[in-house]
Image 1 (cartoon, rainbow, N blue to C red):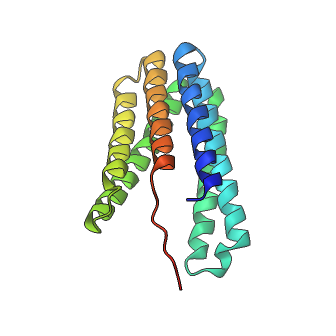
Image 2 (image 1 turned 90 degrees about the vertical axis):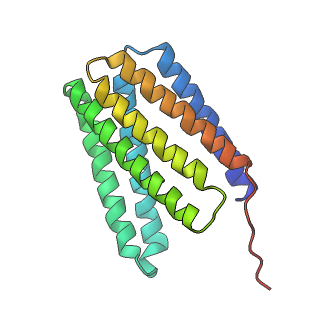
Length: 177
């Protein structure tokens, strides 16, 4: 990881942590803010993946998969953006599904890393477990909007802390001679 990438990850982690604390302080409008954050994050990620496809991935093996992922994520982000005007239960269910999917993917990555004896498998598996826990708790506390905002805020703060820890972790460098 380059120095610029480390600084960017630390800044994003600090901003995410501040956002998590702000949501804890102002939970009344939190669910609308959470839906906005979720949709904007997915839209930005989809656009980044489209740019990556247009610039590099279309020349790679499996590049078309990147295009499909970009279009699906962009579509899900736009769909999440439209959810801000409908009942809150749909936002909560959408949030739970996204966290559950992310958690399962992180756990699978962690188990694969464990199979290859990578040292970072624990952090990946723990991140997946936290995402699954957030999804389950969102469904359990479906009736309480404030509690869902607190749960999502805790997930944001945990995500920020892991991003900052990852930024300070040493990365292996492969030299080609």
